[in-house]
Image 1 (cartoon, rainbow, N blue to C red):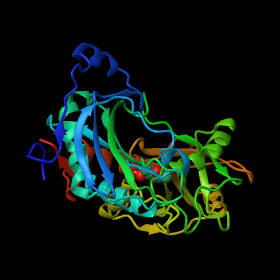
Image 2 (image 1 turned 90 degrees about the vertical axis):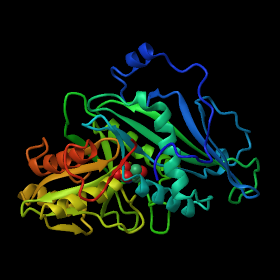
Image 3 (image 1 turned 30 degrees about the vertical axis):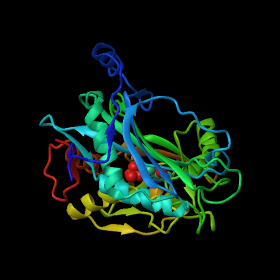
Image 4 (image 1 turned 60 degrees about the horizontal axis):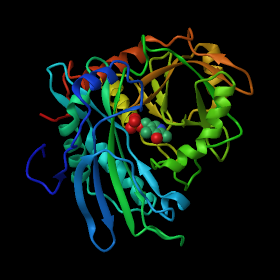
Length: 364
Ligand SMILES: *Cc1c(COP(=O)(O)O)cnc(C)c1O
């Protein structure tokens, strides 16, 4: 499927989009999640009508009833993905069908209506087509935020009979200005993010709400991010609040916690696993404990660790702060395996390397 074929999507173009000079000004140093494009995509759902009213329109504030059920019972899910400007001047999404499938999985877990994958992808394509001038040059990208919430006006506790699906887009700069920096992480012993049978594998706002107190603790300790342990034994490493974790051992192997339902199945995680296997690395999707992590870091068995996700791509971990003692990973500044995997992924996303797995979804 490709853009601009006849479709059910209506375009209500913005009557007064941001002028080119003003847009250029905003794209100089956009940061993350503050500069938004002119338009948004919208699709409505109701039990009575199914999916309907698909359109791209001017981005405006919403008016919602104070009894909209999302405001009370938090039926809300989202996705995060990027449109990249390619080396050849084209534009592409990265594995959007994986985001579409995960969005359905999240919806199912939260007892919400499931948006068909083709409508999800088309909503993104149509929005990027009308706002493509908002994709920054260089290392930046257009960050796309599809989301959906329960819009039925009703205070009874039940799955909503109505949903509003939307996509907004934000021009973002390189995540790390002046190059990648190794981060310091805080291991939360007090708070957990997700338990077996819970919503840890769904990309829902509620998981983030639950993680913020631990993130606040991390910041208070001079750390950048929080590492969550499993809720049952408080021993196994799970993930950061919004990024998956990887460990590089001195024997050349790569390890990441398995997808047991309490971890978000990251598309970056899956891509890194594939690239590592392609490179001939031994890859383990196996539990790894905080004590083992410390021991391996101290003995030199573990040489690198990194976090990954769409927003920051790959971020080396340099320091770990923990109740049972702080420790340093390798030289504290990242390492060559992390760097190579990062570069390999970015090269595919930017179209400067072959794309053997067909991950790029070109928009022109
Ligand atoms: C989105 C997210 C990730 C990363 O997923 P990507 O598909 O790689 O962007 C990791 N953990 C959590 C909790 C997330 O919400």
